Length: 94
Image 1 (tube, rainbow, N blue to C red):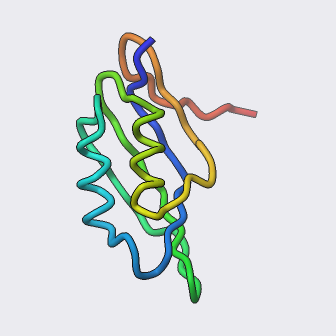
Image 2: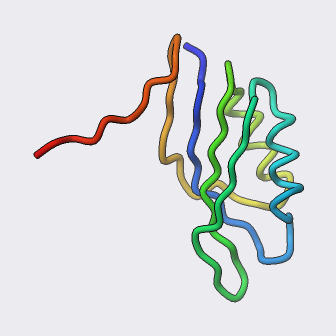
């Protein structure tokens, strides 16, 4: 089944890579059609980001390799959407 969306928690140093460069590198990954990077946390040496990528058939291995090549690190995979169409998350009711 094709991977259509990934939401990743990615940490990078304060200086490198800059967010525009990181977004352009990720957009070039096979299957990626759109990239959104949001800063979630900043401390003295690192910047925490939420990286969302969407596409038709995202190559996860290529994506993680591209992130690591910039000097950033995938801290966790927080959302994965696969299948024939985009399925939106439905919060549980309690």
